[in-house]
Length: 129
Image (cartoon, rainbow, N blue to C red; front, side, top):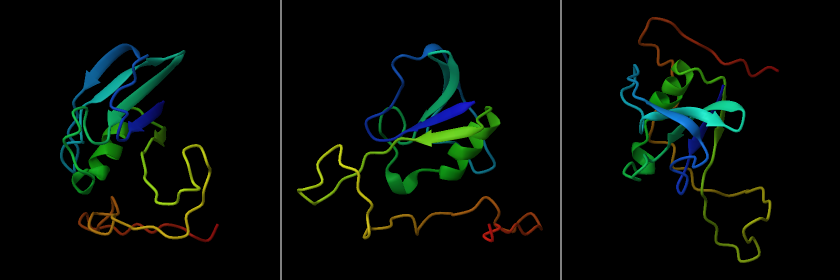
């Protein structure tokens, strides 16, 4: 099932039919918001608002591990995340595809793995392929 993570400005899918709200707990605490399951066209999808539907969770407080875990537990096998970004180059207007070569990384202060070694197992990611 496809899961959609909505960023700033996307707090719900208006065309979702038969929406059902799901409240899940995870080993990492509560997700940013409840999940919504419904049908978008002919496809069943899951949705979560990254910052919550009332935009109360700032970027540095988003519990990414809980969000991903909850989506997987609810049946997601694919995830698409929608995000809003800003830029300072006047020649890069909305709709222009760019590949950034400089950015500010605000992710360094949060957990980066589901496998921190506390469960007496070590998990390695294969980078050889």
